[in-house]
Image 1 (cartoon, rainbow over the protein chains, first blue to last red):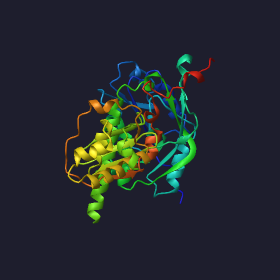
Image 2: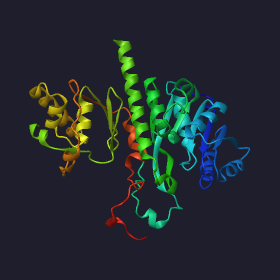
Image 3: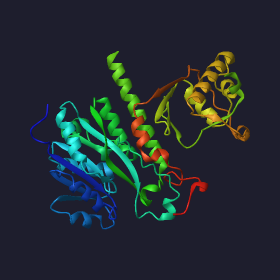
Image 4: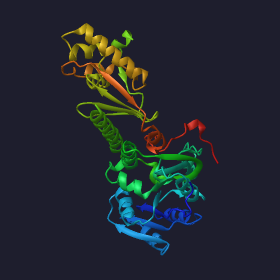
Length: 236
Length: 146
């Protein structure tokens, strides 16, 4: 059953030292047709000009500022201010493609049982990546199912039921959120269209704290196993 | 696979990661997006293998009281780890001499369970496919100008 009124949408952006790319990210949000009801951008304690860049988008973008607490805490702070019936997320260095919100909003409106809608995503080399560096990279530009925050449109009610991102390990916040969501019965579908582009640039190329990231991944898996056993024990 | 009892093993690469949670070892292969729970004596076997011991050495050192039963169980566990591509045969035997014998523990039937419910997320996450240098890097021969 189609609803007569489209869902109102809040878009949440967390930015830490993203002065170089955040304007493009915000423009890709504001170019959506129809545009979202509100865009809330959080400057997560940047030491560069990110806050000024985002402030230049007022009043179309509401800027929040906080000390550096990480992406998850920044998005949770933005969600606390969001008023839309659905929420979407975009990293400050990534881009949405035209039609992202319209397609996903239509999919959500068409099926009240859906909590969220993902779309496909692909990677691209940031134009500012030095050519010599880009030539050494193997970047697969083909579209893949985008089980990432930036490719999701989520009902607000589902977010409230599942909880925010800040409860997970810092380096695996979305995987932890998804695992918790799945345990709570998270109903989603994957659109075949590409909705989000992930930028490969020098800052995300270097992964200086991989041991911590791996430890966080394994903690998420462990938590998932503990939850699974608790459910099994209750059913026994 | 009895022959593997006298073989030494190592990780196939940085894509296989593990963490000991006391009552279980969680192992993940970031290339496949699968993760595993090692239970019973499997965590001790896993740790022993990564320390450079052979399956036979582990069976004797860990569970010395009933070698025949325990050797079979260790061999089965090693075979499962190999089948899941969580280990590969080591080329060098140099580790063994330096590795201390694993401490003896009570035997419990090793178990390995496989899970795929986070596969889609792990495969799409860029961390899984980066080398130590960062994002996937082409072999030098494939790098061309322009």
